[in-house]
Picture (cartoon, rainbow, N blue to C red):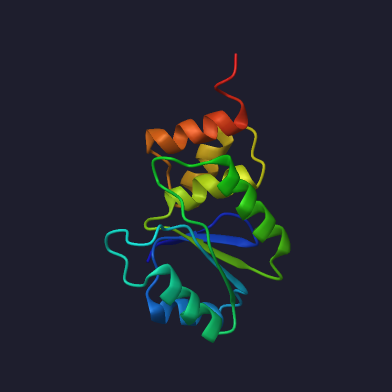
Length: 145
């Protein structure tokens, strides 16, 4: 599983295994947020199963299903609320990392598209999906005249 720090409080990643989810508690994570939709390909744990593993390890678990080609501002708002309420470090993931990174950057209020894309690349998850870039453009106001 690839991982990268987005902020001091947020780490983004691709899909973890059950053992990796369990190990997050020992690393100090208090919250796991899964942005994969139920039934996606190559999903070793369903969102419900992942939630059971995370909660059994003593962490909070949340599921915000996001279509990688149709990101919505409501999903960023839901993530912002969870990030604000988290009592410690947050492990945020999707299948590969860029989808979760794009939503997180909007949730964090990044207002500059170039800065958002640079931050994603620095975290190890360059955003190349045109739909995810368009989402960032819409939410940062870059698509406005």
